[in-house]
Image: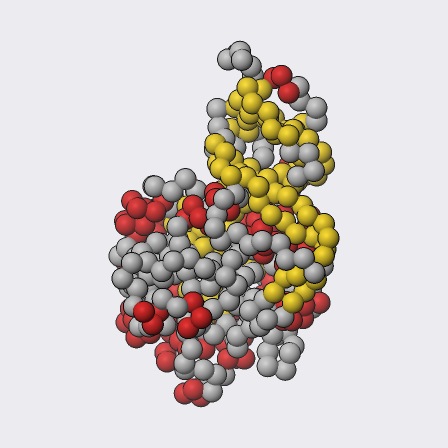
Length: 425
């Protein structure tokens, strides 16, 4: 084969959806030197050294998981192999939510971000201990466990890696320490000019709503005034108290006003997701901007790290137990099953996700000259059962499953052991 062909690789005949370029149709995608070289119709197959037939497949910019937990080993059972949830699941970029802190960020850079085949970013934890197993050691997550200036300095010195701040607004923390921790996290966000990603919904068991006079249904209205445009409200569809839907089953009135002034919403699927409450929020016009899978070692069936105590090694006994296998593309299928269109869902894992971290000029698009990060998905039609963590089921007529991805032009097949199998209805 001649080496003077203009392209190294050609993806032929797929349904290409690239919101950043307003492309939605059957196209070919050409790659040269690890970069997108062209996206157009009917590129000659003989113009590339290698050609892959992707007819009938969906071809989109490399998927971005906005809520990952990949500080493996350091964050205990939470941390997963970044490539397992990344390129081996058809995802080219993962954003770790609160794994590293100002104390542990150097290790995250050296042993996670540098070694992964997947592109890795982080939202820095406001807590000194980072994303350790807080349900085991809740006293570490008090205001005394935050050093605002240290977090600001670490973030500003590592902006190539740190693209936001992770904070919590859940009833357990509020019952212990009130709003102080969230206010400190918001101050870190302001001083770094980075978005704050706020966890809503109960996190680690006790104390619950009512403890120390705290009401989970008041948290949102107290937190939102502390936030800035671009800050992110996570887990809108949580089954836990303190989310977007109150105990009366109504969407909090403050949400629409918050979105109107520029706050964003990330699904943060994981163990929190409820089809029942998602339906209520969507019916109220709350459409998320981004879609994080929120997989970790407690809600996804992966072996616990060596040395894990027996009482924390059993999936059935852990406080987050949910689906044994999951993926970002399965989360996309959930959104489709709830009535959103593919054209609404694809931006959640591409353009919107890239904008969330201020990287829209580098990732989340198939524009020529950008790194050739591409996800190729099977689009199965039929009747499939999807289940949430309340054990509710929905009938999906469309199931997206990853086949392979390109990360800077290199191919990675979707071979992750955590990828779920289709369950026919």
